Length: 213
Image (tube, rainbow, N blue to C red; front, top):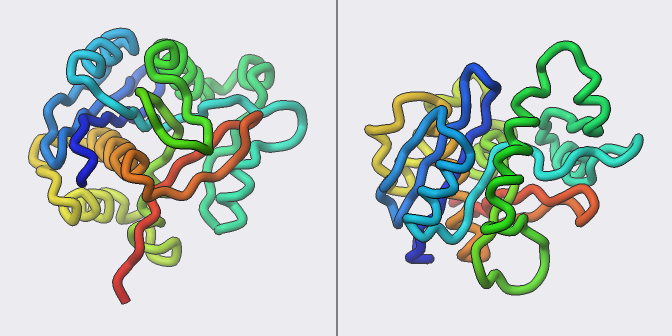
């Protein structure tokens, strides 16, 4: 990882599980937090001079009846994610399922004044945050035919080890997923990513990993 800048990843959870933050500098984990308020995570990212923050949650709600282009584009690649509803539909839901998406919204609201949400095109200058998600990251490294939800703990740790990141302090899959989001931030700064979506629906960023033959 040659960007030389600190990067961060945030795994978004519901109210009970909470959010998890990992900050990387090179291959070293310099900060790891769990179940902290978005504002405190923001403070840590500013303190460590983080350049880019990958967030495992939708950066936009669906608009109208049509789904988000980013999710549709990934589905055409047979990489599937939870379908993001409109905010109104999520608010009306009685199941509580969308609580994690509202937690993600709170993270974006806290971060975006300091880390503007990624817009595709042009050079990356100042700080930014962006949407990504660990299953798509795993597909990038292993191939979608071999990425397995059943083996996600093993596969996702293997990705981090392959990238020379010390994983001893990552005690849960949520920590691991946050680290994968931070790893993707490094790939973005280095220009080695695939980007799915459009401006109205937001973009999903995934590492462009070329597997050896």
